[in-house]
Structures are given as C-alpha cells and as structure tokens.
Amino acid sequence: MVLCALLTGMLISGSTWADASLSAPPAPRGILSIAAYPAPPLVLNDIDGNRFSLVKQKGRWVFVHFWASWCGPCRREMPAIQQMVEKLKTLPLAFAIVNTAENEDAVFTFLGLLAPDIVPLMDLDGMVTEAWKPRGLPSTYLVDPAGVVRYQVLGGRPWDEDEYLRFLTALSAQSVQQN
Image 1: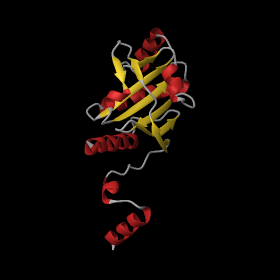
Image 2: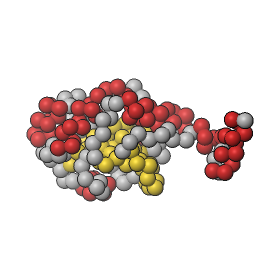
Image 3: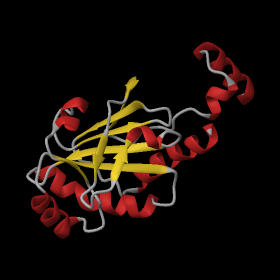
Image 4: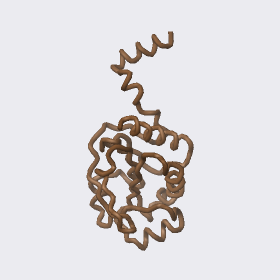
C-alpha cells in the first residue's frame, strides 16, 4: 500500500526513481529554495593571498557567504559559521566566505575576535558582491555541483545547529552521488 502511494505520488509529480534518490532534503528555516540560475563569477584572493575560483569547485556544493565587520547580524553569525566549517571540513563542500569591500586590517581584527580559523575571501573593491546582488548582509547562497545557485539565505542563521548541519551534509552527499 505504501509503495503504491509512493508510485502514485511520483507519477503525479512527474518524478522518476533517479529524481527521488537525488531529491533535495527538506531545507531548515530561512534557507529558501529559489528559481535556479547560473552562479555569477567568483574569483578572489583570500586574506593570505591564495586564489579561489568558483569554477574550480565544480562537482561539489559551495557555501557562498557575504558579510562585513560593521554588520551586527554578521557579527552574531560568524562564530556559528566557524563551528560549521570545522564540523563539515571533511565533506565535499567548499566554503567561500566573502568579505565585502573592507580592508585587511578590519577583517583580521574582526575575525581574530569572533572566528580566528576562518580564511575569508577579500572582495576589496566590492565588484564580486555587486555581481551577486545580495539583498543585504549577511547573505548566503548554496551553489550546486554544476555551478547553479539553488538556495538563498537572507540574514544570519545558526549554521552550527543540527538541522543546518544535516541539511548541508545531505547536499554534499548528493555531490558525491552525482560524480
């Protein structure tokens, strides 16, 4: 009976077995599933001078996060992001933590107090941020393994809580399945 109901639901929705096995997990509060679009370019140096390119991250999910030190919600959220990065570092998930148009001294001081292990990307002139068009800070985008933006998050989130960690873990597992 359950199998019959599942098959009927899949037929009505147009899903296939392959779609069902790769379907997205339920998103926690604040993570919005959006109309998919190709991710804008993102090539930046981190604070240590190492180059990051979104294109080179193909094949895995990427957590793209825009923030600034003067942003109150960013200040509250950054320790949770550091905890999340630490807990998920073994997954096939890339992190692009983009500081928006601030100098290295401001960024270094801010992170030294709140998230000393985060290595931010430096959007010194704000042009990458402008291309992504966040609707405020902090803003987060989840980019799928094909380079397509699938989710958007406006405002801060408790990224180190179990529901967010499970969601990101499930997404990263999909990238392994798809490759």
